[in-house]
Amino acid sequence: MIFTGEASILENANANEGLYVRLFEFKNVHWTKSAEHSEVLKDIMMNHYGHAGIKFVQYLLTKDPEEIKGIWQGYKKELEEQLPDTKFASRVGGKFALILTGARLANESLGINLSIENITQMLIEQEEASMDVRELAPKFYNALLQYILQNRRSFKYKDLEVNSNQEIYGKIEVVNGKTFCYIFPIILKKIATELGFPDLQVLLDELKRKGYLKHDTNKTLIKKQVFKKDELELREKVLNKKDYSPKGDYTHCIVYEGNILHDFDKFEEKESEKIKGFDPNSIPGNRKITSKPKNLADLFDDN
Image (tube, rainbow, N blue to C red; front, side):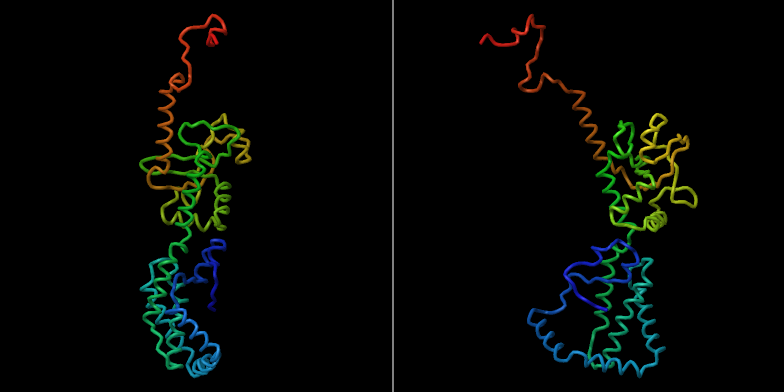
């Protein structure tokens, strides 16, 4: 089924992996040569609507179903070799092979000359453009990074103070040129939903496969000591747990290359240097008092 629209269905739907291998959007395609060309096509189709369909179906009924299946399988194999190497190549190749099979049978039944080669190239370009969108794990991985940076104050980092009013999402550590973001499962689930990714477990499994997840054996979780012993009230507020856990709490640890808080560290260092060298008497308009006045009147001019 093919239809047109002004807005993207995929962009307005939940980011579900299955949807991206069932629905294909072709964007920025010039389907006609000009507005005049478009009008001529519409006029011809309105006057001949349905005739080609009848002839096409009558031709199909003369074909052995196994022969048609063989044509489809051949195109599927060729497409799998040409499409980007992803876990979806076989499924996408099967869908696109239906289009090529239909084009070939249309050429045979209607005596037209659709270019199988050009259609194939167009389909491959479509898949290359859609690949990053369909690969939800990298999309989520990048979206999560931006979320962490925007909410960095909600993560415990180094020895920065936190107060009882803060909602702590987890902890960030930078070790050997990598950033380890430990996030409580309940928090990560909420973040994923907020970002439009409903199936967190699928994402975690894919991140684990790609090496973006630090985890215990056969798990997507790892324990981390986020709260200190004197932060039980803060821990209870976030995790709804009262007892102190000396081994830490379970977290999902997302790993990024480099120090993602590098700019944040530089800002903190600059602010710290400003405070160290701060002299309130150096501010224009501030009056420096070098001796204790005898009385309040001495602070004012005679007038």
